[in-house]
Image 1 (cartoon, rainbow, N blue to C red):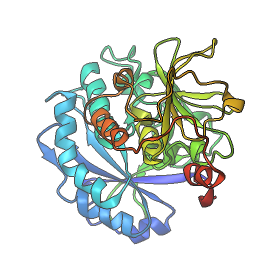
Image 2: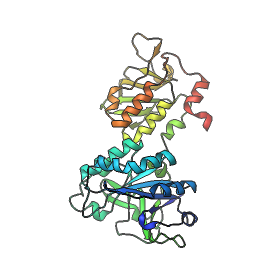
Image 3: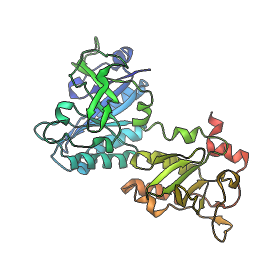
Image 4: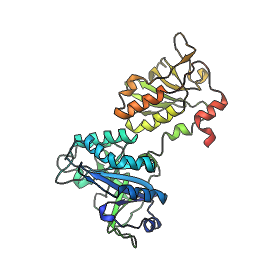
Length: 357
């Protein structure tokens, strides 16, 4: 089902969220801040009102060149942090369209990285093709920072939603083939007040859980039987989150920090070393439930009675700052587990979350 999102900033003060909800808009996108000098004073109250009505919640920061990306992320977080703590997972939009004070590539990159560290998942990008392809910005590979782009169609606002199969979803810049979120109109919602309101569609049902941080590794949470999770180092030196069933693998970056936290929350890991002779080397973090019959022998050298879990130092290099420290602390707090014993069926149900399905 296509989701519809609307913006709230100072121009929309007084908007009636009940009317907006009845009009079919399920997600509120609330401005928090701009640069390092502006904060929307009603951001927190609108966020709480939206949550109270069962709406999804996104927040946005207007990026400019008045300070570094990390400084702007800190400024944004002073408003956004309390919202996250009170309202739960939120999506964050990086509004990148300022004309007199345009953000640079370095500012854009550093803001995305700093905000991802604070959130535990990646923000999404907002711009327009008119801005993205001007001022020497056409070569930016923003897709390498975040996989989701929100923008108006390249021909401009349509005034109506053109449908999920419309060619207006095409982007074609900054490494994005298509839009993840289409801003199709800026116009009033009858009876809602709030002047002209930005209206956006999300056609892919997987996008909203991903950008809001609400869908942490669904494959692991749905896994059962002998499908176990590993943090492993590939032959390319990059660390991956992978699954033994079919070797489904996902490169670990800031966007997967919630996945690592979920692994840490399971509370039972063993540390294995060895090499499968093909793609993986150096071992990784393997959830209790290891089966030599399924995955092959584990070479641990002289096997101790238990292995104290710890985070591979090299894995920390794929993360950064507060997030790396948080994950290291969570993993360090896990109990020791027998290195050679396979999980019992009851333990496996607990670890896989099967009781929730």
